Image (cartoon, rainbow, N blue to C red; front, side, top):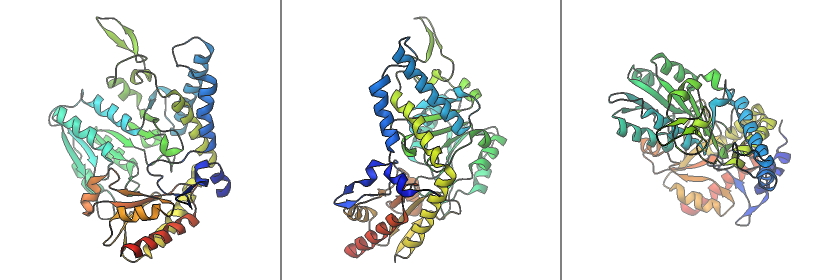
Length: 404
């Protein structure tokens, strides 16, 4: 069992007050808070080994390079990538998705099909729309149902030899639905399609095993799993990364440059042009270590208890509807109260120290499906407590009374 009081003490921000009230932070789906060990690791890099990497023979450069590459090894082991060079540092999930979409521009031809799901974040819709506009490919959408689950039978019927890539999130940021991605990957591979998984919302809650999933690409962000902002990872199978062209040109991603011809560096550097977020990359490894020290089984147990408690408490509020009631869910609850705009609830409970997200959560097609302007989203992490949920529920009741 987790010692929640000890864990919470490791997160400095959780002890502060907002609007004179103790902070209750339920916007973990947007970004997680950072433990002291992560904060200290950022300072340590700049205080002790700040230097550019892969380029210098001097001591600081070597120390920084070693620390950066050790972080890559940690992440390889964390996601169980077969090869170290299949782990690419990015600025986040959006960067990783755009890198792959850009690469597929050289592969697709008019009439080919790209498949996304109705549950996607805009970052996993817009790059594929842009790709289809550029190549003449056709965008297909996997439909969802009223429970916020994908219609798998419809997905299977949409697949054909025209399908070149399927891209779907592991967990929905707006509804918390956990998608059956392993089955979806198998079915896509059966028609020869590649698969990219948006793991941004999954990595705070579970440990993806990319070899077991057999996905071709898996993208995620560091800042949602206790790491720094501006950090992320794109895993790609070696065969696919060799096939795709570089995303950006510049320093580090080259083998040799002349004015007549440039040859590209080997993986992973082929896709890592320019000076990266060195501190962020190193400290992402620290964050991965921290979360593994907590243990993902412990994280899931704690978050499942929080989800069950919050669901029960919220449903006791008259007129409250939860969106996303699938059988498999992560610790996210999206809800509205009849006749009240979600923004109004969010604004009032903020005055009581409760931080939730309101709006469409960069998932407007989901909101259009339910014919609503947005939702109130409470997203929980392992450092949250049932007592905090009770405070949120009481704050919502007060807001509802004020607005009714």
